[in-house]
Image 1 (cartoon, one colour):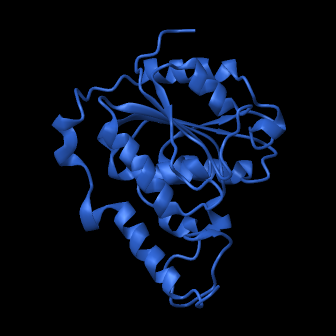
Image 2 (spheres, rainbow, N blue to C red):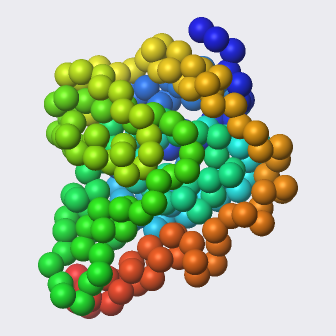
Length: 232
């Protein structure tokens, strides 16, 4: 395995989190300088909440970092990265969840003429992430078809890697220790060495305030919340 070009790695779990036997926990143990996203309600996939936590972790980085995300964590990461591309050296999205299966408050779509955003796909069809990286997909993932994986890889500007018939690439499909991922991460890091010197020097180029994607997600989330009946 080649030497990693970037030490800092943020690991972002997906819906329902990553248990001790999950490959993400194994990866965290293999990379001393890595950290796992926490302080998230793993059973409530609310895009604005998750994306804010990812963006906070990006802000703590002392150098542009790599992000390795799984499932719904990929969607939250996509929102955070769009607002902070110069702080991210690259991403590896593993088995992203289908944005069409979620609305801004969680699982399910919404049919309301008052909403501009009915599924997360409506908000995630934005410009490319503007960071290098890889989307690892499966031919029989119950959460995202290979065809849709190719679509989102194109939208985000990522390369697609077909891992074969490997389900959702989680514990249930046999992914605990995953040495191949270390090789993939190392190769990606060495291929895309960031030219950014430090986080403070690039802060002025980051999207923030009302113009950021996260701000737009928050506004749409408040609109959807206003349509939820009291006591629901």
